[in-house]
Amino acid sequence: MAHPRQHLLGIETLPREEIESILDSATSMKEVLRRDIKKVPALRGKTVVNCFFENSTRTRTSFEIAAKILSADAVNWSASGSSVSKGETLIDTARNLEAMRPDVLVIRHAAAGAPHLVASRVGCAVVNAGDGAHEHPSQALLDAFTLRERWGTLEGKRVTIVGDIRHSRVARSNLHCLRKLGAHVRFCGPRTMLPPAIERLGAEVHTDLREAVRDADAVMMLRIQTERITESLFSTTREYARHYGLSRAKSAWLKEGALILHPGPINRGVELEPEMADGPHSVILDQVENGVAVRMAILLRAAGVAARGPDA
Ligand code: CP
Image 1 (cartoon, rainbow, N blue to C red):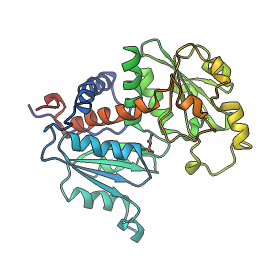
Image 2 (cartoon, helix red, strand yellow):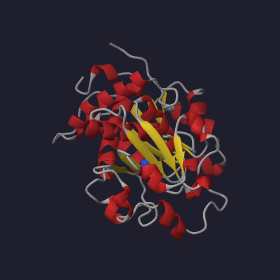
Image 3 (cartoon, rainbow, N blue to C red):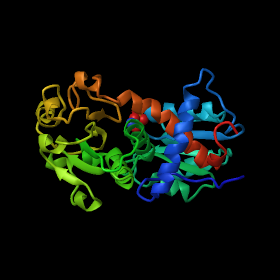
């Protein structure tokens, strides 16, 4: 049965049932990912273009691997080395790439709303791989998948997200995703890194780390988004780490067995001490592995073949 192609532009507008459907599909995809021979024909004959106007390690590589496991042709395009340097606009770039008949455009851009704009101007499915400080839906889905895999359900769980909330698309997408799945979300950071009126979106807000992580079932540490910060938001990196970095000493504040997440890249010694990043409660590399499975599910949905399963 044919299914319509579907954009994935953000979590805010994605119903809980859609989120759960992607996570369920990702469970099957993880089984495929762990096979010796990681190849299924589900997207044979389809083309996925990864269109990255910003740098990436995890997101771009995992979308590429996801596409290849599903037998799609994956093409990586990045702004550096492209005709953007000659003045070509976002829309012209997207429409020219679309003219080459891809089925899915995966797009990362520094401007909030860029994938939404592209989606309104092209005929293929568009997947948001991060737009400015707005949303990073595939990251939130892989985070939810990682937590659901550990806990079975997110219903009633407490998740604390720590750091540069104001500039973080990961924080915003996670807030929507975790709350839709029934979790309670706390944000913690210096006042200068908390967006005004963020409580209205449903987060409990703290400036004190000890208070924020108390009773939390998981703690997600964020990198300071220096590429989006133009003013001085804290005195020194050392001072920031002293108040908001998670160290072995501060791990005594955590609930027994609390999971530690980080979307990457980690600034070791700033938001996370290496002992915490690599410790027994860290699920950071699980997040990365799950990123491939979740992005396989996202590509299937985007290409309109989600209901056929991986071996179709
Ligand atoms: N988490 C994340 O988006 O990492 P990359 O910037 O490496 O893709």
